Length: 327
Length: 265
Image (cartoon, rainbow over all chains, first blue to last red; front, side):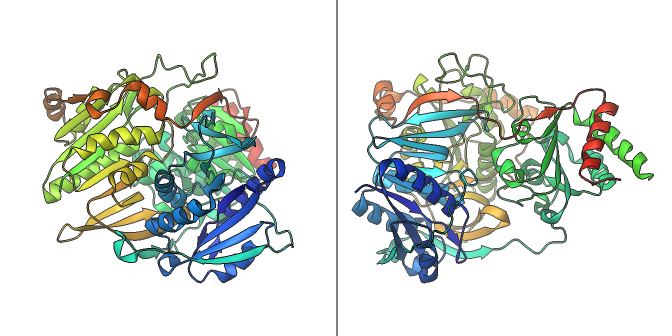
């Protein structure tokens, strides 16, 4: 029977959400094609995780263990997974498009000579022929690809796109494999995991967030947006370019590499809506975006949009709110 | 330390994207090109390493004839690169990351280097794949999404920060030679002075054809493992309502939304 392999992702002994999203998509593909679905965990001392994963309705869970895999190791992952996948010859290997995924999947695919398409937002399979959809130009277009010559495929899948799988109550079998990794040959070494510091502001708890992006143009213009946030009583957030430029601290950054926020209202000011930003704010109840580019992708995830220069709108809005508040 | 930086020429980020009639691609006639944002951070990192440790910075690009490659490479010269190499062919319009990496690998194999830098991704196709694939093809260890680079005293290894999701980072040691994919924000890319821009105009750009690297256009296109089936506009997640009127009228409408949500009195 043909097999789909889902590589689970874990950090500090906890599964990351994308693991369950991959499983649910794998199940959907398997429903029409009758594939066996195997979940793979890499780590060390991962027995509990393997047991947990076995409750999600997979056909098999394989736990690949090695001391070097205790923390993420790209070389370790490529060595362990390439020998496992060579043996199994799955029709499809699914990996999360996370930093780990984008770090090892291209090397793994090149090692195995599997065609790889990254950051997929949809997959479909007919007669063992895979089609995938991914975005280009910062989400402005979708492109569907086929693989004319391939019979085996590897994909990385964008997190938060598919609904996560739920526990089924049925337990699948768990197999332990000891990985053979030539530790002395490795050229990289894990030193330390740094957790986000306990900082003074935690914008992820705010009811309203006013977030500022590249459109602000210069650090000197920030007070315009800060005044608005203050008038509303909102937390001040930012998109990546503002933090990259050092205009606001990392603790303000909303997005994949920063905070995930779900406020009642998210007011995006001068933010174009790059995917990595959208992934951190799309759970907001109501999104209002102000941007001068009518084609900015931020409008695709907004409830209300204002196509205008932020410098024309924001000061007026601040004054209007101040009047209402009587301040 | 000799550093090779791979840069890509990409359409301006504000470029309007129009799908062609056949729904097989986008209309590129009016595209204007610039250096990929991630690559400008990779270049800056390379130039800073050279300024600190000595050595040479070589930039390599591959692209189609109309991608304004000279403009991008001259910008690299003006910002501190010592040599620039371009591979030019129409085929790059259609190559996937694996095939592009195969071409870049052939160029880089012939250069001296201790370190290869690329951006994390290109802003046009967002694959995040070419750099890591290139490392694999060159037989180099790599670290992706790097936000800090430290060099050991003996210059035999690097200690780098890799940015993870949710504010996490991990520190990794990697022996040289190696490849890093560089994340935005790692440094503040410099502006080129007018004098340096002028000097850059006179510098030589080495031009390579596919045949110089042992490829032909047909052979390369035949190596691409994927085929575009269809290009289409994404389904929007929410139906946006555009607020119209004068700034005062728009402000009033936003106030009503905030009131509705119980956020202002």
